[in-house]
Amino acid sequence: MTGMTPIEMAGALGKGLLSFPVTNFHADGRFDPAGYRDNIAWACSNGPAGLFVAGGTGEFFSLTPGEVAAAVQIAVAEANKRLPLLAPCGYGTAIAMELARSAESAGADGLLVLPPYLTECERQGIAAHVEAICKATRLGVIFYSRGNARIDDLTLARLCDRCPNLVGFKDGVGDIEMMTRIYARIGDRLTYLGGLPTAETFALPYLEMGVNTYSSAIYNFLPRFALEFYAAVRRRDHAAVYAGLRDFVLPYVDIRNRSKGYAVSIVKAGMKLVGRDCGPVRPPLLDLNPAEMDELGGLIAGRR
Image 1: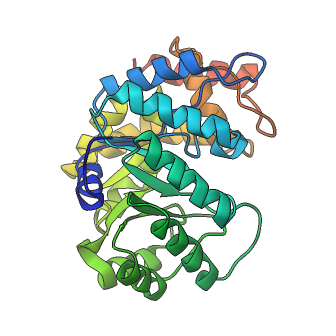
Image 2: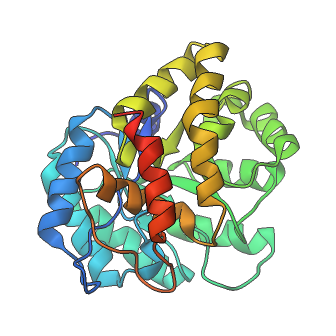
């Protein structure tokens, strides 16, 4: 643990590009602790502002609670206080609270609240879920608005009043009006993170709404490109941003959109293509087919 307060942690995240490392598996699908440790070292070495351990791209949804705990422990030890590490919590409220306490004990710096599993729920129920997690830990909490976990500006403002350690809002929905309402009502009380799939696509317009950073999947396998693209966004270099979108990001998105779940699978494919094979995805996700691997390889070859 870096020793940051929740507010300090959130502020640190807002100063640079974020990433969520993939979780390493052996060829038979078993968790690969040694490979994962090496992957965390690689991720830290390229200078992100923070890492989300076992997040969406880290296949949180396919990991056992024991594997999540092991991933957090490995990441904390390997990062060795160099940058903020955020652990995941999700599923039902009781499980999420247990994961929050486990992450705090392991030395994580914060929590990313992922959507509850399966069930549909009202925004008042989501608020109760988030509040219970906040009260279960002293860590700073970032709420990930995505899927069935969506709340409006009024509900979020009330949560901020009740939960001092709720310090961040990550948007994975793309509702421009709601994001505008949230920032207009809450302002700098929260740190805002972009969390839409392939966040580079939305980075420039979101910057104008107070979203200073985002988590990059591309960083996993092309860290230099991801960091240079982020720098172009922050300096509002429209020419450089749209060149990066046109030449790499949008063709990459075209491959990603061909199959459900490819937002995760394409990242592991990219890792393999740059010589950092992290193993397959776990079912029910599917790996890219050989033709798609070749197409992605051609894109990556021009960016290494």
